[in-house]
Image (cartoon, rainbow, N blue to C red; front, side, top):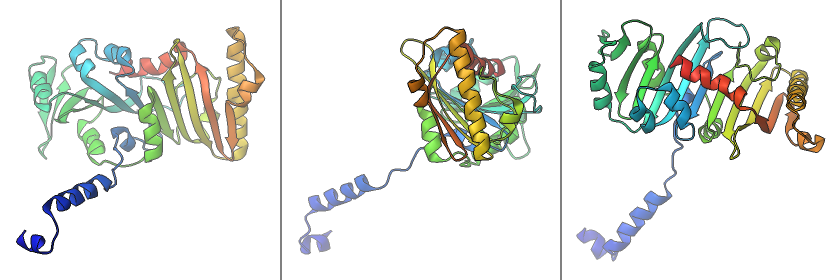
Length: 294
């Protein structure tokens, strides 16, 4: 310190210099647990638990305080069947609930839940499993709960690996949506009422669907779907447009062709859909998958 003062550098200046350096340090983008879920053929669903409080309450009907403290629920769904649309009876699932709750309280509470039993692995891993079914869960750290209907050890390894299978740009879009669905090389998918075929789904390279609530009710959807070839992208765009028009006519909803031109875009093998109205009954299919699996 004496040396610095002899050099004529005031202490206050040093403090300001160091604080300014800290301020200018590059901020790291947040990591979302769903970024590590997108293995080939897996459907990833992530829900903003604050925007979708009613959906989360339905998923945890007997744990309202837990549901209220949740901020995000993310699911990785892998179907044993390639049949389209996606069914819930043959799905291997694991997921993560993010929220404001201490690890100690969650796990202590589970110790007193009669329907669960505590289990341990040889490498020191602990979790709770239902006595009458294939469902396991545990809070490995504060504010994080892992659950699965398959192997808890495998689910824990997937989450702990912190893979980045969904890039930061797509992840940011997913985090900002009320409900987001992502799949890399899917074999099946949710039925969104657009009359898509299993062939079209299996020819998709990547699917990203973003749902947001409208103030007057219902949802809008943004979609980014990459197909195997530009020709297939054009076919998909025509099918979605036709299905959407059929639904508008069936529901007697007025529309303008000029508005549709601003809704569907094709660039090489990528189909982009912007702000397409989606009925509550269509989004309900995804919500039922979430609440039914939990």
